[in-house]
Image (cartoon, rainbow, N blue to C red; front, top):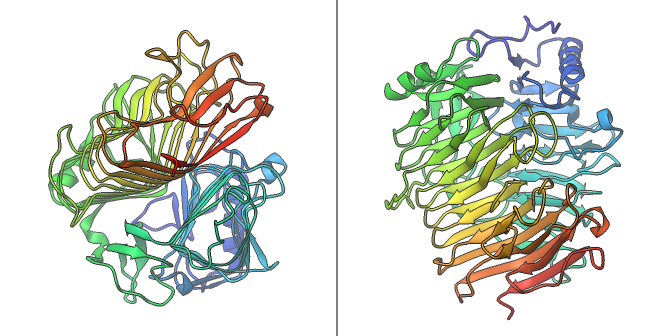
Amino acid sequence: MLSTELFTTSEFGPNVFVFDSSMSMEAIQKLCNDILKQQEGNHFGPERYALLFKPGTYNVEVTIGFYTQAAGLGLTPDEVTINGSAGGNANWRNGNALCNFWRSCENLAVVPASGTNTWAVSQAAPYRRMHIKGDLALWDRGYSSGGFLADSFVEGKIDSGSQQQWYTRNSEIGAWGGNGWNMVFQGVENAPKDDKWPTPPYTTISSTPVVREKPFLYIDKDNKYKVFVPGLRYETKGTTWKNNERDSEGEFSIPLEEFYIAKQETATAQSINDALKQGKNILFTPGVYHLQETIKVTRPNTVILGLGMATLIPDNGIIAMSIADVDGVKVAGLLFDAGEVNSPKLLEVGEVGSSLDHSANPTSLHDVFFRVGGAGAGKADVSLQINSNNVIGDHFWIWRADHGDGVGWDINTTKNGLVVNGNDVTIYGLFVEHYHEYQTLWKGERGRTYFYQCEIPYDVPDQESWMSGNKNGYAGYKVADSVDRHEAWGLGLYNFFRTNPSVKLGSAIEAPDKPGVKFHRMVTMALGGGTYGEITHVINDTGKSANKDGVQQRVGEYPEN
C-alpha cells in the first residue's frame, strides 16, 4: 500500500504525486522507491502514475518503471534539478531492457551522482526536454531496442551500447558512442558525421523542416497550473529552451481551469464529450479509461494531454477517438489499447476525403502509442488512420503484441498499424510492429518519415495464408502505387518468423518507381541468426536477401543514384 497523502492534490487525484523541494527528501525517495517496486516488472498491469516536481532542487534517485511518468513543472528543464538520477534500468530482467516500454521522463535537469545517468529502454519510452549534466547511457549492459530523445541537452557523451536503433531529434550532445543497426540524428548539434555509412550506421539530417514540440504541464510564479503549448518551428536545429529561444509561431499557455480533468474513478466518455462540447480541453490523469462511446474532438486548437501513460480502451467495437478535419488539435501522452470487440480504428484524424489545407496550423500527435493484445485479447483493423492534411506525428509506437495475454494469429487480429490518406503528413520517430497486413500503408502525397523501425509479425502460420496478391507477405512499409511524391530516411525492418521459419517476405519496402519517391538509408535483418525465415529484398526488387546466408542487408539510396 503506497503512502501518498502528503503528495496528492485535489486537482489531479490519487495517481499524480506533486513534490516540492521543501518536503522531506527521505519521504520523496521512499515514495519513488515504493512506486518503482510496484511498477518495475508490472509489464501489463493497470496501475498508472505521474511524479511531478515543482521548481527547485531535489537530492533523490528517480528510477522509472512501467506506466510511470516523471516530469518537472518548470517552463524549462533547468528550473528543476535532480541531484542523483532520473532514468530507468533493467534490473528486473538482469539488464535486459528489450521490454522496458511505456514510461517517460521529461523537463528535468539531472546532475548524475555517478557522472552517468541511465535511460535503458526500448519502445514507447520518450526522453524529452532533459538537461543531463554529465553522461547518458542508453543501455544497462544487456539487450535494448529503443528509442526516442528530443529537445534535450546532454553535456557529456551518450553511450548507446546495445541499442539496436535510436532516433534523436532537435537536441545538443557532447559526443555519441555506439553503433547498433540504425541510428538517426535530426537537427542535432554535434551529431556524428554519417559520411561512412553503413559503418557506422549513422544517418544525420541537418535540420527539422517543421515541428511542434509536445505540450506539457507547468506551474507559474503564482503557483497556478497551466499547460504550455509550443508553436511551430521551421528548419530548426538544437533545443527550444537552452538559449531561451522564442522563434516559434503561435506558442501559448492554457490555464488549468480551461481543462476538464479526467480521473479514472469518475470520468466517462460522455462526460469527456460534454466537456469538449463546452469548449474545454482534456487532461487525462493516470488511469485506464473504458470508453462506451467515441471521444469526438471537433473544436480547432483543442489540447488533449495525458499524464502517466493514461490508457483509453474502446468497448463494444467503437473508435476510441476521432478528430475532425480542423486546425491545430494537439494530442499527447496517450496509450490506445484495443478492446475485446473489434474496432475499425483506434484513433482517426480527419474524415476520409479530407481536403483542407492545415499547413499554417496543423494537428500534431506526440508520444501517442497503440497496443493490440498483450494486456488481454484485443482487436482492431487499423490502429491509427490519418486522413487530414499536414498532420505532424512526433513519436509513435504502434504495436500488435507478440507476447503477453490475448496473443495469437487468430486472437489479437488486425490489418494495418498506420494508414495515411492525408497529404503533406510528416512523422518523426515511427515504430510499427507485427500487424497482419501492411504495417504502414501510405496513400497521401508528399509524405515524409524520419526514422522507421518495424518488425514483421512473428506468428505467421504459413506462406499460403500470408500473401498480398501473388507476392510473399505484406511489406513493412507500403507506399501506394498512385503516389507521385514520398520521401523517407533511416528505415530498419526485421523479420523473425518463429511460428513457421519457412515463411518469406518478398520486399520489406514497396513503393512506386517514380522520380519523386525517394528512400535513404535502409536496412533489413533476419533476426535469430537468419534461421527464422527471410526478407528477400530490401525495397521492391532491390537489395539482397536477409536470411541465414546474410542476416543483414542494406540499400543506401532508392532509386540508386
